[in-house]
Length: 129
Image (cartoon, rainbow, N blue to C red; front, top):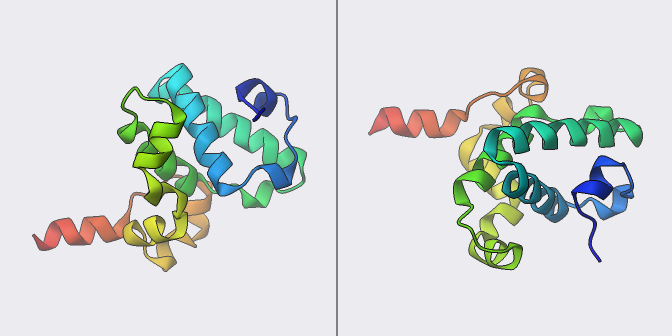
């Protein structure tokens, strides 16, 4: 059985279990169970605890986490995880999706790591129209 919120909150996941796909699934679980605002806050807190517990605090990235939570939240349609995953394949190729919205300079900045920074590539495309 795949780990759920209780296992993640309790820190019972091994680092190798927490792939990009599991990041997306866990974010989806929190958002479905707690709603957008509370779910995002709970997931971010749990992810920070997790990275700290495995000695990888420097891997936490606020902008990437918030970006994907927003993308997940915007796409939740009431279906189950299998339907969600099938309908949103681009979420699982995270680098391509992220690069469409953020320039390397922005996403790799220390500011973006510490706090949410809005997408800079989307902003330029919107201004050009």
